[in-house]
Image (cartoon, rainbow over all chains, first blue to last red):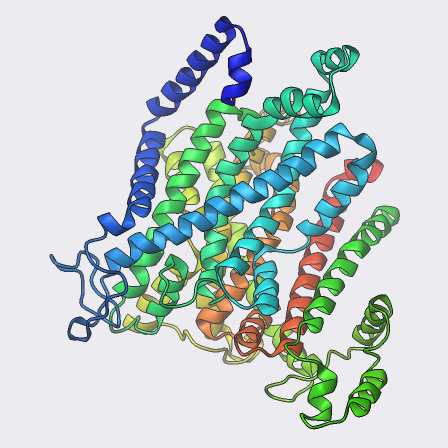
Length: 295
Length: 312
C-alpha cells in the first residue's frame, strides 16, 4: 500500500488496488452516519491544524473584565474564569488532545504491531514476546499514567508514555492473530522456497498483508486513547496550565461549575463529540474492511 | 477445576512481580538520596555512607528489590511524607470505599447493560434495537467526568436531591445516599460496552440449535431467552467485565477525585500531586493488585460458567 511497493507491481494489479480503495471509500460514504462522523472529525482536525488562523481570539489572553461570560455572539462558547475565549482554547486544546491520541495510537501501533508480527514470524520468540505483552496488559492505562507522572512529573510526555504503553498489548495481539493467518498461506512458503530474505518476507509478505487489520484496530482504539488521555489530563497528570488541553480544561472548569457550568461542560462535550465521531467512523471502517474484528 | 485455578494463579505471578518492580522503581526516584535527607545537609561523608549501609542502599539492586518484596509482604510500605502516617494504615482506610464504589457501579451497570443488550437482540433491527445501540455507542464515547459533571450540577446542586461530596459512612450505616451519584457515574460508562456485547452474544446464541429445540418443544419465549439464551450469553459478558476491569479502575480514580470519595484512587492522585512518593507507590501498588485480582476472579468465574473450559 506504500508507493514503493505499488510501483514495482505490473500496471493491472495497481489499478485493481486503486479501484478497491475507491470501492471501500464509496461503501464507507454511502453510510450516512460514517460520512457525518468523517466530516466532523475532518473539520475538528483541520481547525486544530490551522488553530492560529482559525481561532477567533488569543487562547491565552486573559481579560478580567469578561470573566465567566456565558456564550454570546462575540464569544460563541463564552469565556472562562480568567476571561479567556473558550472556543479558541478548545481549538488549541483539540490540537493537543488529537496529537496525544494520534501519537499514542501510531507509536503504540508501530511497537505493538512489530512485536505481534515478530511473534508470529519467529515462533521461538512467540512465548516470550506474548508473556511480556500479557504483563503489560496487567497495567491499566490510568495506572501507568499515574506511575509515569509520579516518576517523571506530570506533563504531556507522561500521558503520551502511558497511552503508548496501554496501546501496545492490544495491537500486538491483533497483529499476531492476523499474521498467524497469513503465515499459513502458500505464498509465504513459496517466498521462503525461492530464498527471499527474512526482512523482505516480514515486510513485503507479512506486514503488508496484515496492515489493514491493524489499521482498523487502531482506528477503533483512537477514541479510547483520547478518552484515557483526557481522563489523565482531568486528573492533572497531563498538560499543565496555561496550555490548553480538553481534559484539563474540564478539570479547571469544575471549580466554577455552579457559577458558570459552561466552562467545564463545553470542553467535556468537545471530547465526547471527537470520540463519538472517531468511534462511529472506526465501526464503519471495520464493517467495510475487516468484519472479523467485530465483537 | 482446582487445577485450572492453580494454573491461573501461577500465571499471575509474573504480572505481580512486574507490578512490584514498577513500584520499587517508583521508590528509587525519590528526588534526592534518602540517606542524605536523614543525615541532614551538613553531615560528613562517612555518616551518610554509614546510614546508606544501614538502610541497605549500598547493596545491588536485585537484593534491594528482594528486600522490598519481603517488606511489602510484611505490610511495611513506609510512611507518608506529608502526614507521617504509615502508608499501610492510610491504604486500609481507603480500600473499603473503593471496593464499595466499584461494587455499586457493577451492581448498577451489569443488570441494566444485560437487560438492554438482550432487549436489543430480541428486537433486532427494530427501532428499539437502534435506540439502544445509539445509546451504547454514546456511552462508550463519553468521558467519565462528563457524566459526573452533569450529575453534580443537576442532581446534586440544582435539584439538591443527593449529596455529591465525600462519603457519609458505609452503606449499612446510612452512607447509601452519598454512594449513589459516584456509583451512577462510574456505572454509566460500563452500561454501553456491556449492552453491546450482550446483544452480540445473545444474537449468536439465539441462532443456536438448542434454542430452536427449546422453542420446538413449546417453551414460552421468555423461558427460552432467560434460561437458554441469556445463560449461555453470560460467558462472553463475564469475560468482558474482566476486560473492562481496567476501565472500571481508571473510571474509579476519576470518579473518586470528582466526588471527593475517600478511596485509593483519590489517595494516589493526591499523593502524586503533592510528591508524596511512599503513599503514591503504595496506592498504585494496591490498585494494580486489585486489577490482577479482578481478572483472576473473572477467570475463575469463567471456569464455573463454562464447563468446556474445564476440559480444555
